[in-house]
Image 1: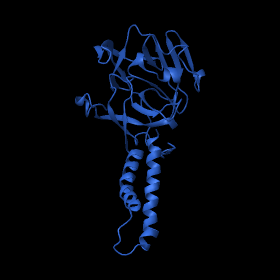
Image 2 (image 1 turned 60 degrees about the vertical axis):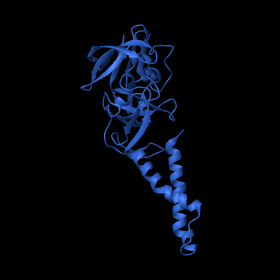
Image 3 (image 1 turned 180 degrees about the vertical axis):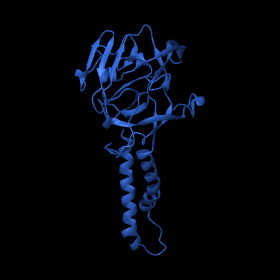
Image 4 (image 1 turned 30 degrees about the vertical axis):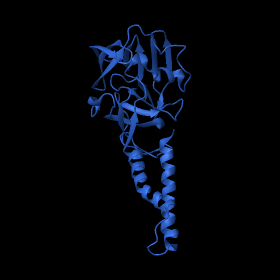
Length: 264
């Protein structure tokens, strides 16, 4: 469901009714006569819808985490806020950038339109910037030939599965974040799992991993739950035109209220 499009259509409808009443119907009503319901309700909702539409389109947008690909950073059921301003101002619906503010940095957690189906929003961590060479072999990540430092951080228990994964702290772009690795999990970034995607020729794969050179105006993203994430290793690069915004805040979680207010 394209909520932005639905909100835009409601804005047009209520705005049209409000304008029609001001310049036509109000002048024909008797003094003191009550507005008919089909004018009163749209006029009342118009300013509310306008405020929500502007906030959601240009400042912040709520987003619910639908899968476990970003565990342990983000859990299924987390409600987060996405900064729509950080990476530039974009026209709603068409997502066309009209004012450049900044670009994604390595380590950012970014929401974007899934390249295979732009009607779906995905969330992953930015690993490779345009021009970067990203290597992921034997579950170790390197960027431009430099292996990212990691250190063990105990075990992580999946509550829903009652199983464990090894937890590590990885440093990218001068910032630390936690990742999960499962010793007995096979690599998802090897044939036959890899899709055919634009600039597929920029990547080489084998049973141990991959090496990809990120094309201009594209980004390479991965989930923090490395062995349980379908990401750029599988379906390719994310174009700049697909960027939605930067995730920065957990504002609610029904099952884990202690998580409210965390994340950055």
